[in-house]
Length: 166
Image (cartoon, rainbow, N blue to C red; front, side, top):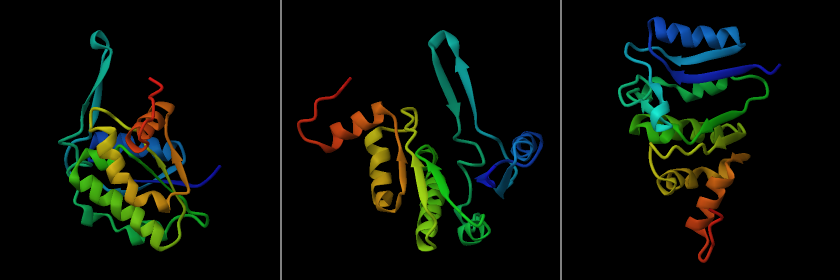
């Protein structure tokens, strides 16, 4: 296997412990912060065929971006480091976006290859909003992962006269 580390903010207490213990059980090292507070949750609403997210009050959304020392967190990565981020993070909150930006900037400064799974969630914002956040980082990415639906949406945004596949 490949040594893996998940850098995040999860609450202290039983729910946060369950999350970090699951990481350990699956061979993933947890690094980050463990402040007091709540974990984000989602609820499947079968009758509406949808998912409801409750992230606003989670410690991840309310994190202090200065509490994550990206120079230290990325310096202690494996001998072949790689940073992977998602497009969910910068839309969760301003604080999460700041941490996300700092992680990408630090990885670029020290030459760590980076990948992004766009993973657009309509409940958090529009594809156009997310893409505006991502564009300044595109030149730093080694790999961009997106669905055909997201590719089509980006083509519609970026290419005049593009006819949507939808």
